[in-house]
Image: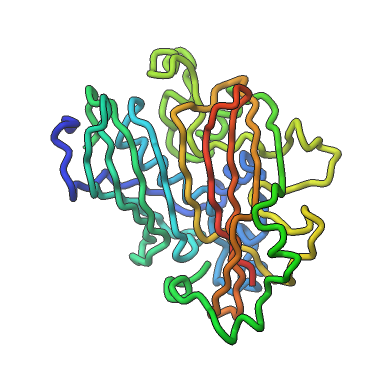
Length: 144
Length: 186
């Protein structure tokens, strides 16, 4: 655990990883009612110019949220998250989401932290980049 | 999904003559395209969302253990920030009304003919969250507008980008979230 008053610019968050599996994407499709065929059908994804089915963008965005939550714990809050999707997260690839602190500012009783975010696959191909802002209760600790 | 080089080269000048954006389409920028009201959120909805996102790992306890959630800063179970309460069925529109997707869109919803395209993909999402979280029992109102059109040429030819703005408030008119989603059609 890291004391919150010791957070520094450049500090890396523990990564969040997930394999691209139909078992996982089916579950997300079910809760988000998101059943575009390019998420499971090779013929459809190839017709659209891709070599394999790929994950839902909202799931990729949820992974950034999970990365932040895993680090912050229950006492932080997510203020904003933005993501540019650079390339698809293809089936059977391993996604690794990472974050790096770019700014730390105290605002009243909270520590506001800005972060750069990234997602890559197992070939180190960029899948998404983004930024986030979170606010942490100044009395708690974070995972790190 | 667009390559970064495509994202950085908006087209201007003579290529505007080939624009996919019609005058009719321009006329609906800023207009309310869609209003939805969710059913009251159930704790089971929150649990299932978190389980689906974190699969195959166990999600954070605050999203599935009600007794534990009662001890957190919120005093009850709240939904993950990215939770979608509009999936499958809404209080408005009714299930018997024409279906509108929460993860795609069409100008047809405002009576305007959309351009022809083979594929539609979400390329960028920008989320902002308020301090108020979604709790069990909340009914969330969503208002969606097209806020911008722009075009670029990429490896799949002319690509039309459309930014949708989606604002969420709860039943007490407290701001929950604003999402800007950038879709590309080609």
